[in-house]
Amino acid sequence: MTASQQLRETLLQTDEEFRRLATQHRDLDSRLGELSRQLYRTGQEEHEKAVLKKRKLQLKDRMEAILRRHSAPAAVPALEPSIRG
Image (cartoon, rainbow, N blue to C red; front, side, top):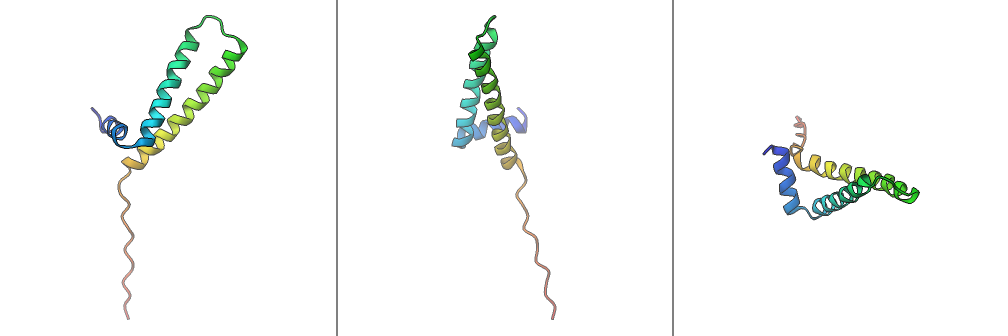
């Protein structure tokens, strides 16, 4: 398992927002799969599919931001220059 996969698994266990986003992303993916398997879709279903794709991308972007925030090395505070007098 890569470090990225480990972080994702850890966040699924410990970060409520990440878990909620992942659940919503999975649910949208499932619905999009249902719509894609239909041979014929109504105009309303085509619109739903487009809206769901956009929402799914938004969720993925938010999840990626959380992953980046947790994987970034801790910021090192800048040392103040010594004052010589």
